Image (cartoon, rainbow, N blue to C red; front, side, top):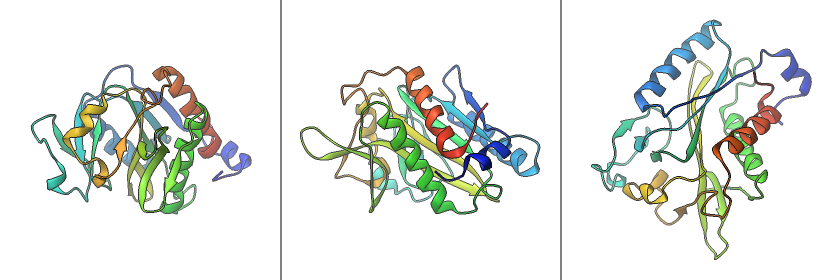
Length: 222
């Protein structure tokens, strides 16, 4: 864990918000920008915002245009986060995490490690062994027939020690939609999902697991 229970108890709980309807990417960016400013100014509590997006591609600050294989397939947005191209769409849970690291632990590498721990712990709730890879970011699974695939991605930005952007977990998306990009710049490995692994979990069940494991690592939510 990244903090003790007394640390968590002393902190204002993180607001946990689940969007009831698909959220456009520009709307998500606007809300994150506003919330980061409010957190920094002490006007609002930290926020974990769970959303689904309509099908779209996002480009991180290291995105290589050659990795956008089908630029006309879905809308493409400049994300402002670290990383390369990624896909978001129905059946994928995205959680935008806006935390004040200055009040917690001003260590970006440790924060990324905590995000990976969070995803790995969530997958464990469904009997899936998620793993890190030293040479590439995200959470990976070894496939039953051999090889490996990415099941969860993360990309963050930090401004004045307040984090935004976050993680995505493939629950039951259309995996063919990833074919319009080289996901995260990694061509030699595929992507997978809970459904593709034979686990038919509802989004509500995934949300419950995400929230429980978030609290284990980052402290209480409300």
